[in-house]
Amino acid sequence: MKVFADKLPAALEKRLPKVVIVAGDEPLQHRDACDVVRAAARQAGVEEREVIDVEPNFAWGRLLDIAGNLSLFASRKLIDVRLGNQKLGQEGSKMLSYYAEQMDSSDDILLLSMGKLDAKQQKSAWFKALDKHGLFVPVWPVDASRLGYWLRDRAGLHGLQLDMDAARLLGERTEGNLLAADQELQKLALMLPPNARISADTIAQGVEDNSRFDVFNLADACLKGEASRVSRIVHGLQSEGVEAPIVLWALSRELRTLLSIHQHIDQGQSLEHACKAQKPMIYDKRRPIYQQAIQRLPMKRLHKLLLMAQRLDLAVKGASPVPLWPGLHDLAFTLAGGRGLLAESAWTYRLH
Image 1: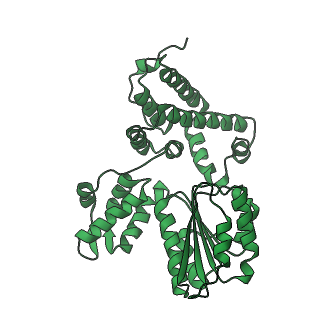
Image 2: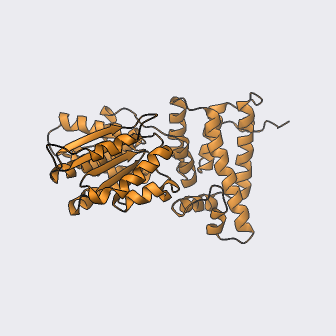
Image 3: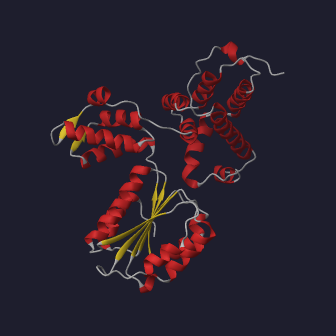
């Protein structure tokens, strides 16, 4: 059964299942979810814990050995399997399926922590076998639109009161890096008296920019029309050493997708069918941001932006005078509804 991380403590209070799968790439919430499971196991009287760190060429028979070993000191144990981003492979998949078959005769608890599971993996035999016995906790990054509220609530866990302006500023300076945000809140909790109220000035003076982004953050911000955030993400990607062709690939892909959606709609199809026609298919959760972009960007504008992308591709190959990173900023910023910063002459370079 799927349970999101914020609902996990309440779910574990009702019952402690025989298996909990925590999967996702956001490290702070991933860590917190696993800590909640361990605490619930201790509360339920499970005093023994076996930790298995899965590394390349891991022998999955070890899991069954540990599960089969009787303890002299406890009747139940927590088997803490830490897969990280390692692949299960055929052996791991078979062993987990077999382990699930033996769970009815065991009182042990399995905590399986791993990277993100896609839809195909969630339909696999091993996942379905384990999921029948417990909880699946998918861990997602906090959306930028909710980040300020999330940080305000997080500050409360540290005995602090965070003004919304302060929460938004902290979100800007730590976006994509919740571990850094939590560390800043911990530092403030040590420096300030309990229940202290924190203003935006306090954040501005004491918190450095620790935000981290990827090209998918940039694409989403462009589609949502978040021009100022787009500008911040582009500069962040450049400072982190992300290769310019990767950024150009992400932006060009979204431009072609938007043009394709426009064409399907012009042929009389609904937005839903137009999104499903894309490869990969645009799922329901992401459809609203494409709808926003379609309403904001007519085909003529998209064709001009695609021409900008083609000129930037020439710049990557050294065949265009357009400055690369300023050009990428212009392209993303304009896609998000802003106005580019480069001189018009930079874009009038003729293709040969």
